[in-house]
Length: 399
Picture: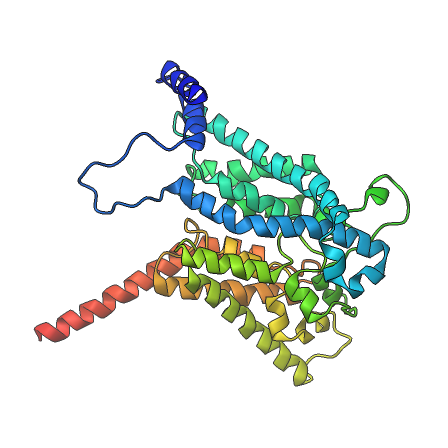
């Protein structure tokens, strides 16, 4: 009660000043809002923006913990390949978790510290409340970057993403691009060797110290893009015992998170399902091209084209993007039919980018950003189509 009373006193002291949004944000984060609706509302519900954001974070926590174990597992497996013979026996160990703690947690801390600082600064300057939208973005960002991403690089990207991806449009609820994906895109285009190289997916303390030998942890997509043999089993790919960004490897946990978000009615099942359908459709087309001998093994596109269509669904960031990025209620399509179109095109374009851009085989994030831009157009034509059909029905009835 003492802390709550002190915060309340500070809130009252700075009420009406420029610092009021900062103290209001701290008070709201720690406690429930004092104001409730009393009448005249159309819908009364217990959820609010903070609860919605916290629900998404709850779905991300298992993926974060798994990613921490995987960071250590990939490090030791790169040194001793025999550890991959029995992943379950060698995965959940303290040594693996410790590397995850010292490498992944700093990414989370920096993401939240820098992002919320920018949010507070804009709230004070503009005089509005601090918005809870970054609660999810701050967790998503560490999960979609390589484990060895330098903290200063992440800080620069977060500032760019929050300012350009959200604040310039007016803040949470008015941005046209997903802020987390904007941060990821900035990292890729500003520091491409750190995002697409074959030495950044596995923690390598020795190599970062400057020695010549590096621990290579190339992703499966990178191996396919270079027509190399993929040594991981389907079980490893589905469970997540493979190199990759911190949170994108375990399809199992991602699907469990999807079920949780759908159950809580936060994630759109239409977008998730249609994204997988679109990816499978594009994968089937490429498989047909390979089976019809339209393209030869010597082609630089052959590796990813020859991958079974279903494998595209469990490797790379497709599943993570479909569940946690494409379903962003602010930047996604709002109409039910529009969600089917929106999701299908994300999956379709993702696999197309994977195959036709070997330098950047992971295309889901670019596909989502592209469809973020076209989501309002999709909804516009869906609504106009509904209006035209109703007008035709009205004319038939009056005739």
